[in-house]
Image 1 (tube, rainbow, N blue to C red):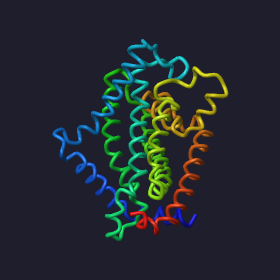
Image 2 (image 1 turned 30 degrees about the horizontal axis):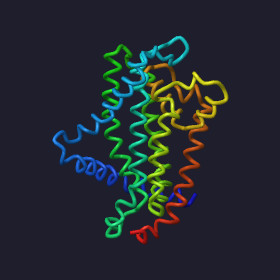
Image 3 (image 1 turned 135 degrees about the horizontal axis):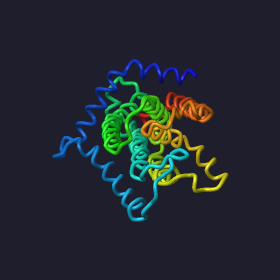
Length: 272
């Protein structure tokens, strides 16, 4: 608990710096491109179109039943989940290598290392907000109008950030010690895309496979986003047991990540 409170305190004390550095990092990464930061939004949109063409258009997939009696076109169902996946994937990958790629800079600065993964996550967070705005506009044009249930997207954004940060604390620490961890994580996340309800529904499977796959906390976040966008209900309330499970996973990951981060960070410079 002491390690966790230390990390939380460092995040709160350096929150302004995290926001400033994350925005600077996002701008500097795209300054040599003619389209600049536009590529941060174009890449995921192009991916969505490719997946829609392959999984929806070519296979002539029928509508997806979001809740009993309510079907939506595949492209909207895909869009509602893929924007969350893009944020999760990019933030987790960037967060896992955030410390060891900045070790030389950190060796010359008096800077709390626990906020480094948060900087990497926040740089992706700005992109996610813009993509969410584009998705919101597309849904309005498609006839899926905003409802009061859209407010819960704030909760799911916060939930996503907490999950990614907890994972990044673990992977950034382990990746600094063993570089192969980052490569293994990259391969695992690519596989996770097909084990999450992004491109297909779990309802086509027979028990106990759907229940087992729902142990993946991404399922909770993705279905929560769709519930907010389609206005089908208060997902985190209607599935309160799943909410408790999700936050239990996040807390366990965070406590473990904070413990190993605080334990090993004084030795990080040795891995230069």
